Structures are given as C-alpha cells and as structure tokens.
Image 1 (cartoon, rainbow, N blue to C red):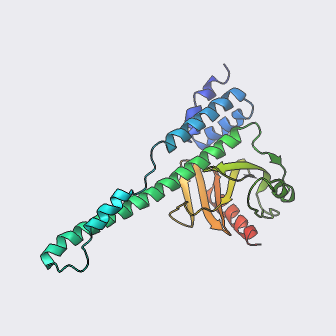
Image 2: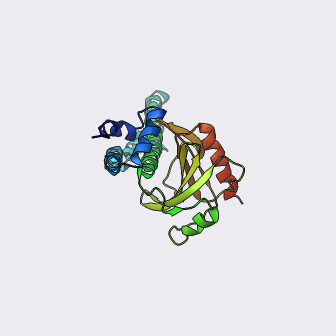
Image 3: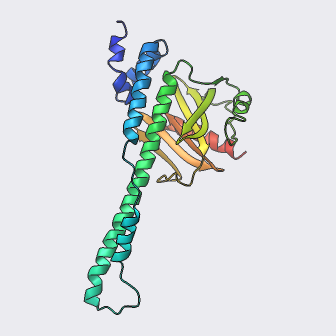
Length: 250
C-alpha cells in the first residue's frame, strides 16, 4: 500500500519521537488518510491507558500513624540521648512523607501534560479537528455558552502572527472545558481552558514545560486553569500565553 511507510511510523509519531520534519509530513498525510488516522487514535488511546494504570500514589492513613508514633510524646521527661534517635527517626519519616507528596504532585503534573499532548495530537489527526470553525472570536466564544460551566475571553489577534481556527469541547479528569486551535505559520497550538480545581497540584502556578517535541505553558487566572500546547518555538507559546492573560483580565 502507498501508506505502508507512514503506518510504520505511526507509533513513533504518537510518542513524538520523530524529527520535526517527519512530524509535519505525517500530520499532512493523516489529514487525507482515514486508515492511518484510525491507527493513530488507537495508539493514543492505548498510551493514555498505560500512563494512568496503577501509578497514582497518596500517603495512606497507616503511614500517617507511623509518622505520629515516631514523634516524641509530650509531657514525658526523656533524657537527651534517648530523644536524639527518636527525633532523627521522626525527621527521616517526615522527609520521606514530603518526598512522596512532591513526587505525587510531580507525577500528576506529568500525567496531565501527557494527556493534553495526546489530546492535541488526536485533535490535529482528526478529520474534524474543531466543532466550531471560525477565525472570529465573537463567533467562537458564544458557541460554548451552555456547554461549559464557565465563561472566558479570547484575545484580539490583529497585528499578531496568530490565527484562530476554531474550538471544540474537551474533557480532563471528566471535567468539561475548552480546546481552542490557533495557527502560526505551519504550526498549530492547542489552548485548553478548564475550571481550576483544588486537587490539581502543579509545581508552579505559572510555569512552562517540555514534553518530548511539545512545548507547554500553564497558569491559573480568575478561577480558570490554562494550558498552551504546541510543537512550535517556546517564544510563540509564551507570546500566545501573554495574549490570553491580557484577554482574561479585560
């Protein structure tokens, strides 16, 4: 078949392990090949199942009780040499708990970024990447009314290199949100917007990351959590993020 060469690279494309040139070439091929697109969607769904299977950790009640037992009891006179080993053990346990909490937060962040990267790839590979097709922000924003439990503002893109292509409904941890597609040159950027949640933990309230070939930036603003994902230059991600921040404050 004419597309055998492409299909052999679908797995590497889903894992973003190809060069930028090959990534763009396969993306162009996917737009006209339903068979390869179906293979990619299956691979993305399989990756998401693997990433979320049995890797979550939160400190248990039993661990908390062991920490409390390791702490020196109040009101009991203890000699210095008896107290030092207990204090050392307690500090070690507390440090272990803090490390586990940090790793749990870090894993959650990486899992979230990985899931959004998969959604970005799957969207661009779809024959209908957006539900509302328009470059007009006054058409795209009203389309979401009644479909999501919040509102948001879109930036004015005049005199910028960015073009709004449209948007679609998206879900993260079963919560409904927005996925917007912006174009800059030959690259496309996904902007995800969800209601911020107390159980979402990120190492920084406003930070950037890189997952394989994708650059990402996330921040919270007015009760919403924004994620910007794309394989374009990090400066493009930053500039679009700044436009979105200005729009959210207007």
